[in-house]
Length: 121
Image (cartoon, rainbow, N blue to C red):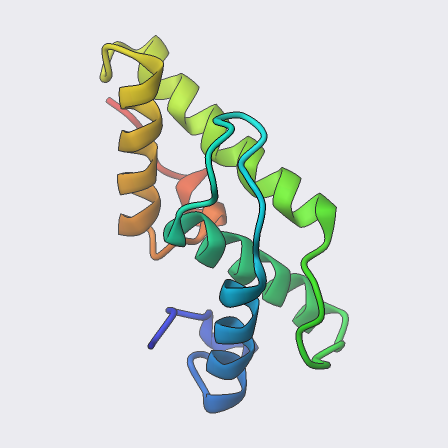
């Protein structure tokens, strides 16, 4: 499955795709803000952030686990975006705003760095 990995870290080459698949299947647990299991989109966003971090350090070893700070950063960015949607009355409830944030995340290729750049209204 192509994950839309940034071209500056190798794009969707076989090595990156394999790493992403291992990572996505290895992410478990629940979102600390919603209390629900991570969605596939959240898992992809977490893994893309982790891969960017690893590639920037030239540490391209096999997937073992995702750093807690990466998970926290992704959760925070998605939550901040959903709060913005709610505060600007684009969504009527926090649950709706979180679901809408998930849709925006998908449109951004599950890249939280792009999600941060999305302007609302």
